[in-house]
Image 1: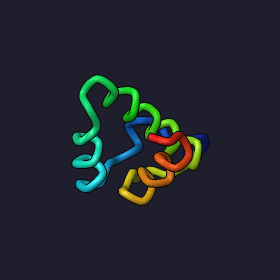
Image 2: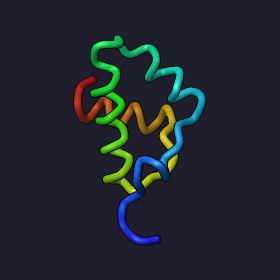
Image 3: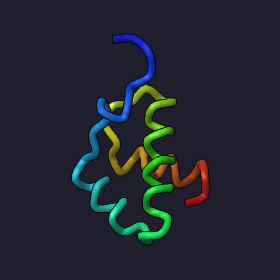
Length: 61
C-alpha cells in the first residue's frame, strides 16, 4: 500500500491514549488531529509517547 497512512491505519499505544485523555477537553480534538497529522507526515502507523513528545516540541503543546 502506497502513500501516507490514513487515520484507520494508525493505532495509539495505551500510554499515548492515556496522555491524550489528560489534554483538556476543549482542545483534545485539536491535539488529536495535530498528532494524527504529524504521524501521517512521518509515515508512522503507531502513535506512542515518544511521537507525542516530538509533536509537543514541534508545536509547543
